Length: 352
Image (cartoon, rainbow, N blue to C red):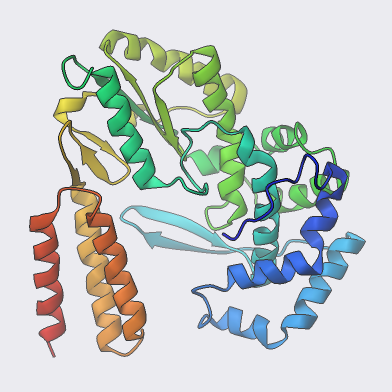
């Protein structure tokens, strides 16, 4: 996501300028350039681009006149590895989502805690896993003492987000009624919760769960806490202490956000036993790729090899996919696994 000019709220644009900033032609054309990356061969993207200027100008007019209405979604399922319901908006709606995301990010990101790692610049899964190792080493005094890690995730998070609560949280920072009208149009375009397919859902999720972050950091006063989307971990030398945190956190989620912890995904483990978090299993002196992640990687590489051999993707695209997986392996102890991947690729490419 191309995000520039973080000086939106002080010394730069005022809050009342946000709506004009979002719907400006410059913003919408910039959002288009960002949106189309990696999608140029998609039929709906090709069709939109064929009449690009008219489509963008018409979107701008509708937004300016406040006649814009969000279109319906196309719903489908993907297996990654569990079955996920994805809801896909039209191209013009998704272009607008990108423009909205850029502005909302500038407004809200500085309000988030340091150790929130999803959908943020210079954050991500690898930084979160590295932070886990740092926190675990501090709590264990470099592995001299026990370090217990409480790991939780939120039950049906995206489906369970309360739209009215989300809008109220946004209103705490944005008093431009035109922006609220627009965000309300996007949020209420979905029957319940927020859709996985929207880029706006990434910032909405962080706005929503920032309330949990602030509670854990400033009310519970937990120094060692990391969140990535709806997964989070807390560190302590005392297992009973972590057990006592669980009902406090769940009560806050239920009473303030109408959410709940997933009862089957509340885990407390010793660091030296290995902690499964964001695709890696971390130990005091090494980390390995999660077994499910490893199986998914082989499966996806196999699919890409088939597409490449059938001339459905270019050699450049195929190599980029392989490099992304080798990049994942660089972040863990994976020499043996890397060699297996290389042999697998050679074997599959050699088949007729």
